[in-house]
Amino acid sequence: MFKRRTLIAGLAGATLAAPFVARAQEVYPNRPVKIIVPWPPGGGVDLFARVIQAPLGAQLGQTVIVENIGGSSGRVGTLAASRAQPDGYTFALVNDTFAATEALPIPGSPALYPSFSTVSLAISGPQGLFTHPRSGLATAQAFAAAAKANPGKLNIGVPGLGSSQHLTSELLLRAAGDLRVTHVPYRGGGPALQDLIAGNIDGIVVTFAAGAQQARAGQLVALAVTGARRFPTFPDVPTAGETIAPGFVQATWQGLLAPKGTPAAAQARVHAALETVLKDKAITDRLAELGFDPVGLDGQEFAKLFDSTVDTFAGIARERNIAAGD
Image: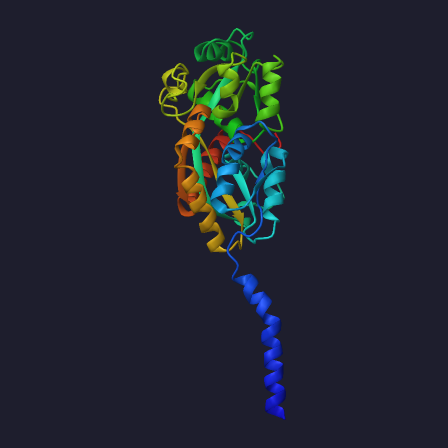
């Protein structure tokens, strides 16, 4: 009797366990994948997310949802992503501003980077220094001369104080002769661009991709890029290094993070899918139009770049006496 009851119980347990085993063996992904963009629409990160959204979904065989959660130099959206279930269905698309906020933490707030795994370094590109056609600042040299003649008078918009654009601007100003401007914070590159187009500020430093289309349309004037070379699709826009800051190079980048604990297989699947997308000519051509270079490096290489970027930004923040919330 004991053996019979044990056998029946075992069969019942196996029957109940079968659906769970089947679900565990389902192919990933089996439902939509969300990418949190910690910025409002219209900025460089959002632009890249929209470029890869459909083709990445095609590679994964599922819909990719892009959710914009802006605020506090990207901290609000990044925090939301860190609290998501680590099940492989939520990722964060961040840029080097995340490294900037980790280099310049808010007192009393824990570091967010340890809450993530680096998945894929997707793209890199220059930051851009832009002004508007009515500013009278037609060249980078004119901008530098105006800043030198009137320290602090020029108003330069950035997507948040302590953002990568703010700290890159400080690095550039130092390299151009320790120039001083007044930085005006915005919730993202999109709102800053709109205010510059309206002539409410003198200039902005944003991801070059964010202002490229407006510059091509004549709404903005691109004064310089912070990369090592002129971008092929914008050959008339000089580098900062060849105009006002000899040898200056500071690239921006974007990459995918996953909440810590996300299965390694899911991370590898998404990295491989993104790598495939970034090799597609239609995508690379579109990225070139925007001012981006595809990279497609794995999580380990991404982690190395992240750490070195944190070091660079922490250094300029100390030198310029910049604290979180300034």
